[in-house]
Structures are given as structure tokens and as C-alpha cells.
Image 1 (cartoon, rainbow, N blue to C red):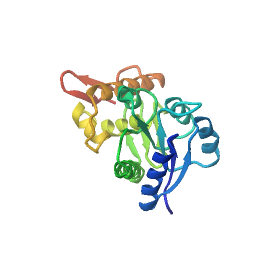
Image 2: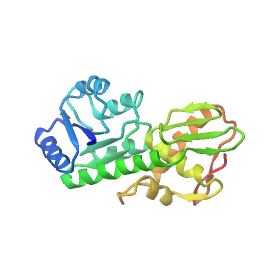
Image 3: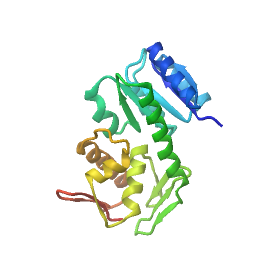
Image 4: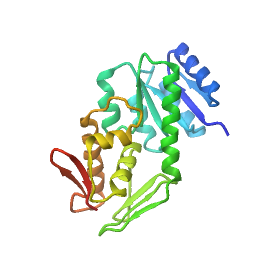
Length: 228
């Protein structure tokens, strides 16, 4: 069955070009140009991936991304011409998986869609990870959920992948560059600040479910280590 990609873009020519290339790559596509139409559409027709423009009529892409994350973990790639927003898109608690800067080639869009869906499939295909610790961490890749201290964690896709990477090899120190390479495997430019923000947000969510100690240790000048 073809994967279904929803294109949320108010520039019709760009949307049509992306749709043509995705269709040629065996994806099913649909297009929405107005931000207010997105949530009602998703409630009825959830896609396999969303291409979401940052600047939209009626409602912007960032607020849409935040609301989508309250009810779905569908992969989201943000489309933006505002380079200054990249750290917000990737690093803050917005829930986007990826971004593409305008102007871009439609081939790049197809490549990013392929790469992100491969990453998601890899997580889903991985066996459920269970790490025995005092609190207990359980990661279910099939359902994309994680529990800590026997309570569910409300994670963004990037936080879910980060937790998986750190916890698979407890005690090992991961440099920021190693984490960047594993979270974003398509050689785009991502700063250490983005990784630090992901870690900060993940720590906060772990603290909310009752851990008294910081299970993600900072190793000065190097990176991070899971101490669960």
C-alpha cells in the first residue's frame, strides 16, 4: 500500500511540484493550503507523514505542529524560509521531526521523506527495549510509547529517538556529534544547542514522572550518558 503524505503549503505551484515528485516516487498525496483546515482533516484522514509549511494563512505551522502532537506522533517535516526558526523547530518542544529550508529542490523533499520514513520503520522493527533499573524504563517501538517509573512519557519523536539511543548503551558516553549523527542522519547542519535542548526537555519529562536523580548525566566537554 502506498504511503500517504499530506502537503500543507499555501504556495500552490510549490505544492503541485512536490506532489508530482512524490507521486512519481509512489506516494499518495493530498494538499491543504489553509492552516485552519489541517486539524479537522487529520481527525478524519491521518497521513503517514506531513509536510508542514511554517507560514500559512489563518494559522501558522508551529502552532499546528504543537497541537498535532497532543493527539498524534505522525512524522512531521517543517518547510521554512526563516532560517532563524530552525533551532526552535528542532530543539524546542514543538515535536517536528525534520525541516527543509526554502528554496529547495523537490528531489531533496522526496529524499527527506524517504529518510524519515526509514528511520520510523527502523524504530518500529526494533524489538521492545526493556532496561532494568530502580525506576524501570520500557520502550515500545511498535507503538511508539515509552514508560519510566511505570508512568507514560509524553515524548516528541526526536526525544523518543534520543531516549532510545542513550538507553540502548547505558554507561557509554555519547558525544553531541554522535547524537547529531544518529538523530539526523542526512548530514544537515545541526548545532550542539539543538541536542542540548532535546536533552533538557527529556530530563524535564523524566523528572515529571518521579525520578529523584538525573538519569541523563552530563559529561563535561564530551556529551551525555544514561545512568538509569
